[in-house]
Image (cartoon, rainbow, N blue to C red):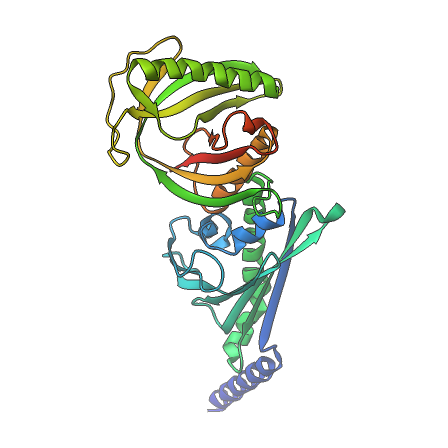
Length: 358
């Protein structure tokens, strides 16, 4: 009997200590970690203000590559949501929701998961830093409330170990992802790049001439384009074909000294309906001209006004945009010289830049 009483007294003491210590523990926990990136602020913000690259930077897919992810709501900004379901112990199911965002400054998330606590929140704060503010400090904060849930307060003792480690993993993966994206600010005011979008081009009949390696220089490149267009013009006249749209230049290699490209012209039979689907043509070719029926393709596209030498940087900017938005490149870039070849080598050049995507 005495032993039973002693046991009950010990149990009561443990219970009292549990309650007293639990009450003394914080009812709220916070964690913060930072990393620095040399990518443009626009790129960093657009990645974290959407969930399209969530699998590539967040810790959840790192811990369970087989996790099921489902996007809903807008593509980016307030209301964007991602739900996840994992069979891995310690992950389970839940969702992240962008509750608010401030342009190029901060993105706030509300989080629901199976862990202890309520009102789970995370913020990613972007702060320009480094020389001339060329870098970005990325700080991720996390907070959780336990209220009077004493078990939750005890669970909070491990927030730094578990959640803090996940934040470190996520920030490291985010830094690695950002480093794979060209460091061109497609959203920079005044860069004359606009209309970024994903579109589908229909199947098209094209005539192609490869330029070979042309020495870099406006006059050399313009001369090569015009001379190869003459070959294409001859084939068009000999086969009763007409041009559809502007000339297209496909970049094969843009080297330090030489530029290798294809001159391409979309064509159709004269008098053919503009809405008619492209069908394979029988074309009598001349000289270096080749013919293809190119299949339908999806492309990321942007419009640019400016000098030809700026095109290479603008191609990288369009590529950065498509990678930020979760698209995958599937071919070589090409440009439509919508303002004409001669104007392309002045400040009034007009281009549509395309990257084929999967």
